[in-house]
Image (cartoon, rainbow, N blue to C red; front, top):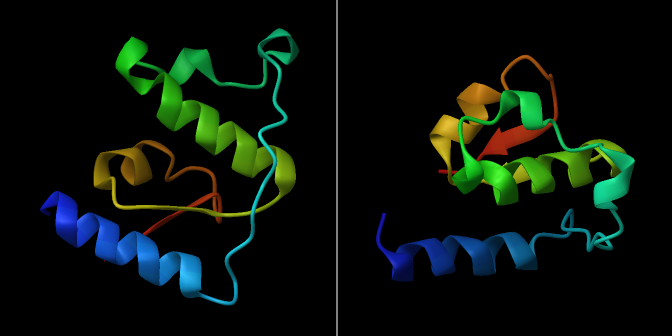
Length: 82
């Protein structure tokens, strides 16, 4: 997917009435980010967003298919956007 196409999808998501702003209120000292599931530092942002969704009881929408597959065991946490 090109960057322009990705931003187009993002704009559609933002316009969806189910879209919800979530405060960035996780603390690194709380240890809520599942570092045990990370293959490397490049996954910190993905895992942080998943932890944020988990804490707020919402689903994370993403274009990242490998991320969706890696979190498949947590039903309803993450949803792949096409």
